[in-house]
Amino acid sequence: MRKMERIDDILGYSHLKIYQNSSYFSFSLDSIILANYSTIRLRDKKILDFCTGNGVVPLILSRRCDKSIEGVEVQEKLCDLARKSAIYNHLEDRIQIHCMDVKEFASNPVHYNQYDLVLCNPPYFKNHEKSSKNLSYEKMIARHEILIDLDGICDCAKKVLKEHGTFCMVHRTDRLLDVLFAFRKHDLEPKRIKFIYETLEKESFLVLVEGQRIGNSGLKIDKPLILYQEDGSMTDEYAKLQVEVIK
Image 1: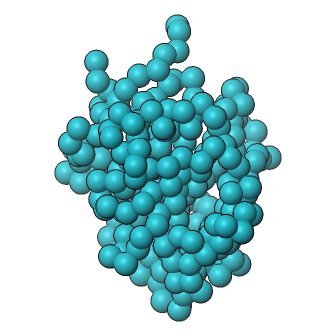
Image 2: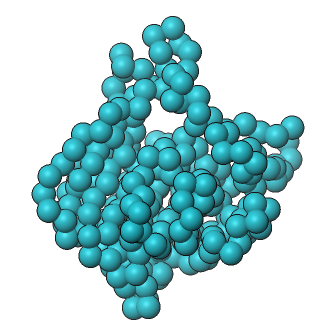
């Protein structure tokens, strides 16, 4: 079957659409959670999304605030999709996509201490985990720590964040200790954790973690996001986050 480019509707955000291609890694619930539940402060002016993929996080953030939003993505074809979506939604004056490696972006002194909020939906799996590696290189680097690992992501966030700026990451719950360790190693003090559950009868499978660069200690556990009720129906909160393909 021929893989084709398509345009999807992001439900919950009127008239907000995104270009995707099944040949590459499409956005999923993880990015939707990251974009919807990250904290945007009134004083925040510049927002940056690491590993932005096809740009779904900047698109949603554009409906939550009127700030300047940038994305960094190493895959050129995903950058092209993200830029097309920005133009389609008339957001090219607010959303800027940088096609480069996150480490390269963060190593440029012009970006040091420039951002109030940095977000990231990073590769989840360590490079030595072979069981679930995808066949295509494009999808592999989106899911596995081949080009950058958790430690590298946090180091890059520390470089580009302003003092007391916020770093928000979504990750697998079974790597929560790795996330917290990496945050503190790079002076990103964990401030808020939000667990995501398929149902309350099952273990949490995703977690949202927010930290503050050179922040004071003090961690809050947020209200969890539950996807399904006991009868199998979606919770109202989850239903608002669904994505629908335009036929």
